[in-house]
Length: 311
Image 1 (cartoon, rainbow, N blue to C red):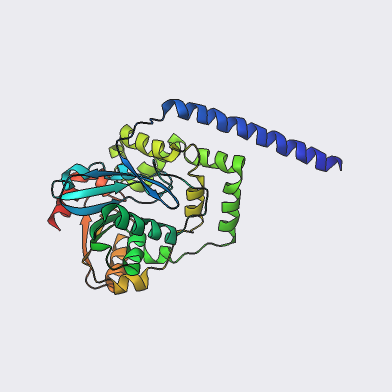
Image 2: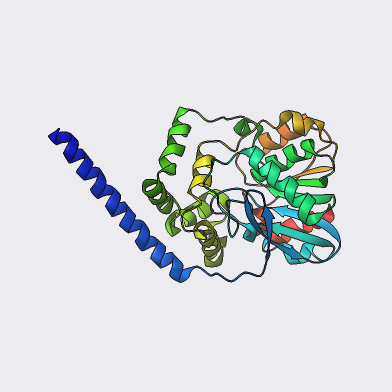
């Protein structure tokens, strides 16, 4: 009984310390995060989705890669130039940036529904789309569910077919439960999303040249990750647990759209990804952006833009 009481006291003390640490982090965040917004909100059934609109012309939807640090900022070098010929729509996916971050386990189907709703309710007509990273899988699956959503589909550094077939295991389920704990989950997220870790993620994972990761880019990703004071923790956990993955093979094989695949030349397994996608759909046309990795739209914006405008 004495050991149990001691354990309870220790647990309570640890939780109290973590709670105070979380509040200290949040007090600093409130003082630094900007509340200014120049965009609009789409009131979807499962939360409000922040988005911006640029230009006038045929519709073009830009969908950023999905992680707890990302947002529509990913397209900041592209939006105005693409808007010369298009009405460009740039949302923050739900769970990211200035959009709502519901306390749920996120899945691929959840984002398929979100994209379908956004195209139908906001854009209101068939649109060309550029999707980055994991978000390419949402577009491919949404296209199968509704043939009237998309015209041309441009997939920018999509995840490998093999990776997308990975499903949650028991460790993943335990991890999600850990992040669901109010105090401990938030503490884990604040540690993962600190400035040093985000800077490391950008310089070592996303960019080929770490010197091109400017303070403005790091700040934008840090701000996006903390816009809702720790509510990004469940998206972070869902991604770690592979809950967003889905086998896109059949959907990609059946797609009749014009599909363009763009990869960063220095992306790991680039050729394997290209060949696996083109094997499933022989109509896919592939390009690469030199001296870039996961985010050519930020690292080599001029080269990426010239490529996009030539398609």
